[in-house]
Image 1: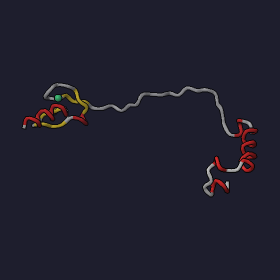
Image 2: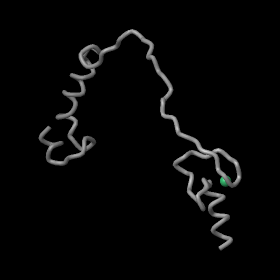
Image 3: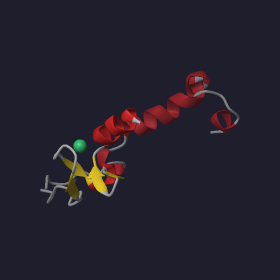
Image 4: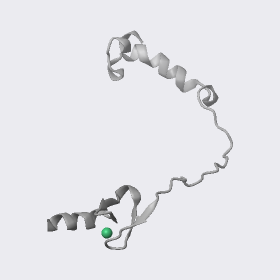
Length: 88
Ligand SMILES: [Zn+2]
C-alpha cells in the first residue's frame, strides 16, 4: 500500500511485496468476496415516456410537439418551416 500510495504503478511493485497479497487473495474462498444468488426475474417494463404529437398544417405529417413550430398561426414541422424561410 505504501508503494501504491506513493504513486508506484501496480506493475512496478516488487514481487516480494506483492506476491504474499496475491497468494492470500488467490487462496481465499470465492464467498469471501463475492455473493452468488439464484437467478431471478426482473419485471422490466418499457419506459412510459410518451411524446405528444401534432399535425403539421403545411404537409400533414405528424410531428412530435417539441419539434413543431408556429408559422403564421399554423403548426409547421421543421422541414416545412425551412422551406417557407427559403422563400423569403
Ligand atoms: Zn410539414
